Image 1: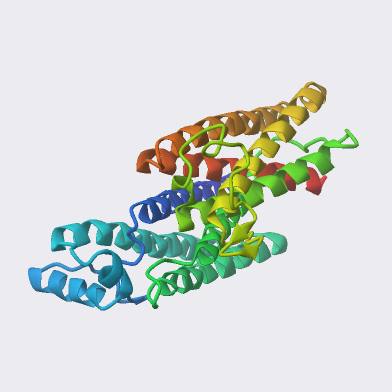
Image 2: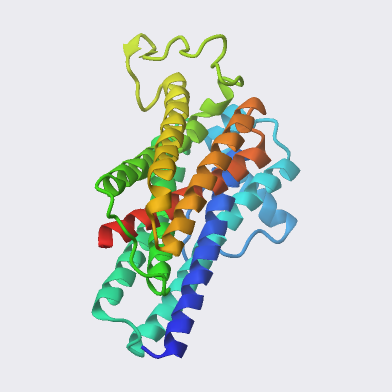
Length: 339
């Protein structure tokens, strides 16, 4: 491939990564500001123009009033307050459409010019499938809060978030493949297996982070390192007299999210102390150092998120760092698996 063609594809991939990261940030803020149910319909092609006149705003607000979130939670909401939550969800949906355009148009042009190998073409078609599915998953998530219960399903929220982060990670990996950074070493017998274990821990930490957000579980305990008055809180394994509740018990979800963070910290610390000096590829070493740094930062910010009773700005920063950690970790895993 000519240098010009490769450069154009790199710019395209960087543009996609940037706007998808922005999409995840706006999505997180949409959840933190409880704005996700302000748009009660899904119009793929004709829902781009927002309300422009007072009449348009009253019509959209009246539509919102027909659903449980207004009737149960926000019955005293003013039009001005509704506009605030509307713009967050509107921006999130518009970004989704922009991502579709930024992906599809250059992809078709590059494909017609035969810039891609057969393997690359399949990779980008897979991304197209994931992106299209993500739009449907997003609406599937929103619909869960338009029924009798005025809350978005935390499980559907987790699916929506993890698919977004997988898409971002895969694009980042395709970008890294185009850089001249050499192969990553996995000469230590335990390095590959332990790092993949670490990657799985990060994966489940993201899942339980979404559960935390969906159930507002982060507000259940605002103390650290203890949860309330003890390290192991009451009702950890029981929910409404039912045993366990791994996916819907907010106490267990909060406890397990913390536990996963501690396990990830210990695992990456071990990898750094045991293997970092033995890595000769400077890019791989920098990559691993970056991951170690992100784990430290994420754990530090996570503590203040809890202590602040999930302040919106701190919650958003926590999600951004978590997304970057997931992306860099997944790319590292793919690099060592490919060897």
